[in-house]
Length: 375
Image (tube, rainbow, N blue to C red; front, side, top):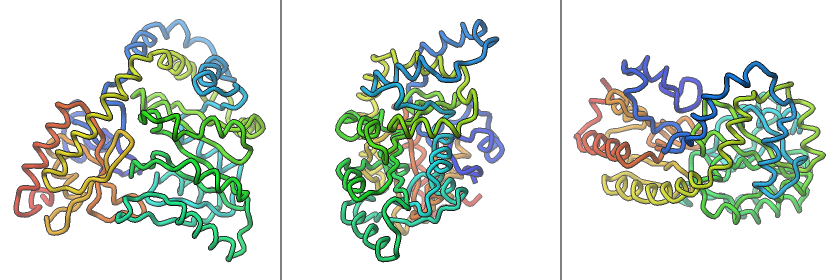
């Protein structure tokens, strides 16, 4: 199982499973910017020896200032963390909800963090027939059910991804505002929002800075292809940010991460090129996957949720193993709650890589059975 630790992008496990060196793999299992890091990252690494001997800024002031300017909020509305994973954990430690409402399938760490905090999971089950969209009716039904069971406003938190992982679906911001009007607490993970050209329409970052019951989590590792540097931030009211900061360990964000975060925000050309390319390549890749007989769900992010039609003799696990032996890694999405064993998630990469994936899929799925994947 490639997702031994619950995530994609685990090249060490891939090497153990498939016997290839790390450089041999084309990795579609991790949703990173296909361009790789901006050139400014390499430049900064060359100068880092002059910085490493000093402690990092414990308040991350320079990066917070740039992020505040980027989003049009105050510095006091931002807390930078050691990746979105740390921030998810901090949110649960602070809010300590009795119940957590999740729209499933969703990122596994929401549920993991909820359970660790002693919170019960109350799932909204998204349906393939509705393209896994979170609708206002689904939210109203869940809210009514909670009220019937005696769960009062503020006892639960509603934790959503927008775009959602693994479905790639955006959430209607008015849906979140409706929940806030009902007195609910809402957390929105916008880790992949940077890939959305209509970000200003869908992002709730500015709204979070002005509301005491809304938090927005962002990641810098996906869009800037720097997952080895854990870097993310949360936006909320100054009061909520101060309370979150109380639970954060000192020097959570090292100086290299801070410096890289400051540098990449300046590269506007890189950001614009990424937005154009991912939108066009996602559309092309989706069409090609459909043409070879796979079911592809529409996505607003840099990845696609794909399912294998019944009767083809393949599961996502079998397909993952068959592709892995050829040096191509995909995510077995059946590991997400609410998806069965026909689902996989595929990142959008550069055309050469995408063409290699399509060639391998055509060869494998054109077979009469999945014998190669069972080997």
